[in-house]
Image (cartoon, rainbow, N blue to C red; front, side, top):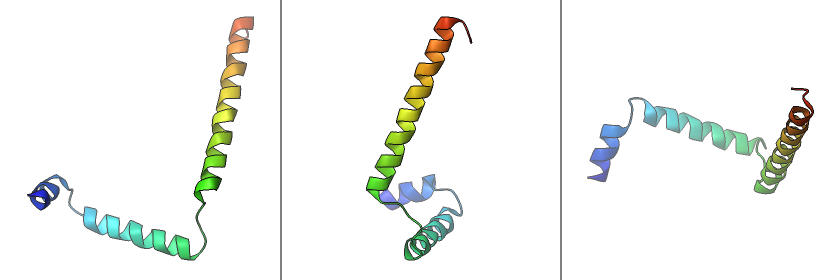
Length: 67
């Protein structure tokens, strides 16, 4: 039953698309093209901090009538 539902919902060419993406992912790992979870967390935290700073600056400018 699960396979029937899966095959009804799945678009044509999806299996090939997925196989290609998996193969590319394996090649990327072999070639060292990846980031660790720790690196990703640090980068994401920095991006969030930058956006928070940007938002605070926009709020200050709006309060002062610059916007």
